[in-house]
Length: 160
Length: 201
Ligand SMILES: [Zn+2]
Image 1 (spheres, protein in one colour):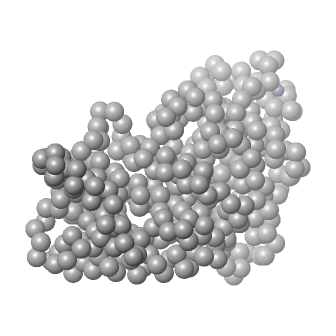
Image 2: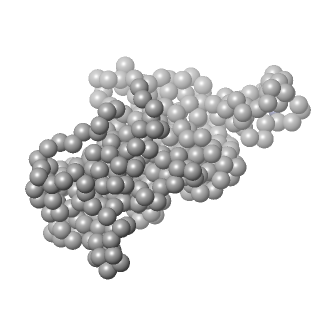
Image 3: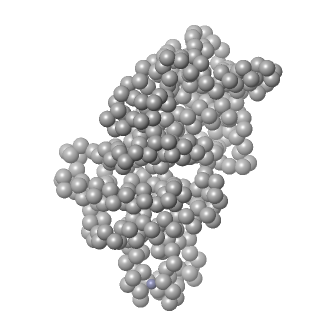
């Protein structure tokens, strides 16, 4: 009860104390201005971090499923995808022969580089050193990339 | 709405069998959370976008290896994403990143009640951001995952690979360090209240 908060009141603020420990903490807070001040500052820092989290939640994603799909399948794997069967082979390497597995997984690990060596989707030197002012350029590259997948139909999640 | 865990298990099974719509459904359900976590850790929306893409490309290929008895699906995804965040941060850590972070958060002036409000908000956020950046990587990651991303200690322990107790201890150490640094700046309670209010829509 006489002891200062050793954790800046974090457990107190997160309501992780037992009722007894909480009562002790409250009793200490009533008599210790130093711990009260520290607790207030900790609470405000946490509130600001929470707010930052909410602000980040409003930042839109730059790309969507089309970009991931293209990297999984590669733009040339199913050039006429509308007529292709629903089953797609990114998990197929599990069941086929070892030789084929080596080949398929090698392709699967580098689908973009294998299929479109002249237009890497990401990890270009430019993207790696991109600054704020470069963001628009990088974005343009991505947009044109996503059009390469050219799905003739927009898949939607079932249900939901 | 629906039993999300049952639905998720169906999606995972179907995607493992090569069903693209199921894979897309998984992506749509979880990519916002992965993106937001990466954004919190990296402070740059384009980097966070790359990490999100990389994580999903990897996760959908490795889906058959996901073991629901060992972790929740989102935790597994976060684990995949966080190692990519760490690599990216190591490869590319520029002084411009904090500025980028503020640029992303900045809203049009018309949106703020007064320019002063907004500058005050940015001032406090900038101090807080600088304080977070001054932490060691483990502490920075833990405190960000706890308060910006909102993970539990158990999840932080699993995602960061350190266990729940270490996660809690890291957050505690980080909080004390942040508080000391912020108190040294002499902000008043009114400053903070204004700043936090101004950040709210
Ligand atoms: Zn005290």
